[in-house]
Length: 218
Figure 1: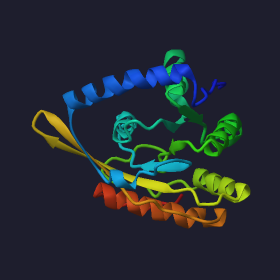
Figure 2: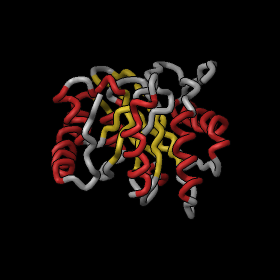
Figure 3: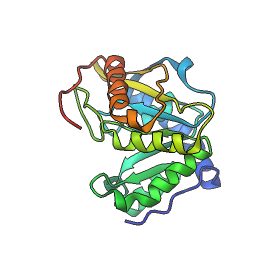
């Protein structure tokens, strides 16, 4: 599947972001009681990796609202880009398709990811790789390993911060209560640490979400 990726400085992206900054808060206030904690842990600049809990598709716009006024780029499964209008919408907002079953098909996405890191962008990855409701998956280390490889190859002055984010949904009367907790940055030095570091990130996500971690192999 060929997807035309939109540059971060694109006028179309800036315009759509401005529109969504009005629509998403209105949508959120109608459906949810929304609380965000830990904003002091958000880096002032990139590159940085945002690593949230993943339970529903609504995690995506809610993370965008929690990181208000920050242009985020989302790594998302390729199935979301199947339909032309949705594909255009997602890529304009900063969506990056990833085929986990056949990484060779995602080479353009990986190159774009490296470009975003070089441009000091903030990138959202859901390390569980799919929805886990009521528990936290062990996490997938492949993408994190790629990011750490980039960090080593570029010999960055400072390691890239990985920001764990917990999301919890609670039912209260007619609206759900959504609590987002942004954790302290986590760091790794080498790509050889990827698997162990992934589990460290997942434990932080589980703690911030108030959930147990599922026992499974990557």
